[in-house]
Length: 142
Image (tube, rainbow, N blue to C red; front, side, top):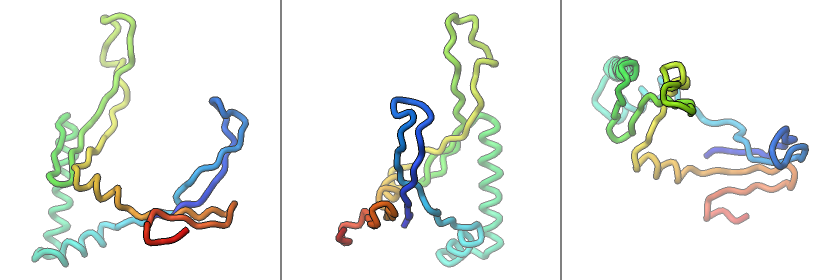
């Protein structure tokens, strides 16, 4: 579950400039450490911890190497990782050069199963302003 709290901010720009707006911000988010990931894989398979660690390290090295070559890396059921480079819009074709490219970034494109898992995440909003708690669990009355 991801727990949110209500925060406020005075908008510095845009059509709501100068207005106080309220939004939900995550309090904290759980993080699975590499050690916890190793533990889970060791429990779910017949692999030893060293084998798991070696496989994860090799995967990271392979992904980095592929990305440096400009290749997209298909991670099977997880998704696809690739380098994305945008370009500035120029008035004339001769103005388009390597220097008009934006800073490369890495994008992850999740497969359908992972997208479905994300939709199922439970959330809770703790609103100190109204002294209420709401969540997206249909079994929990508000």
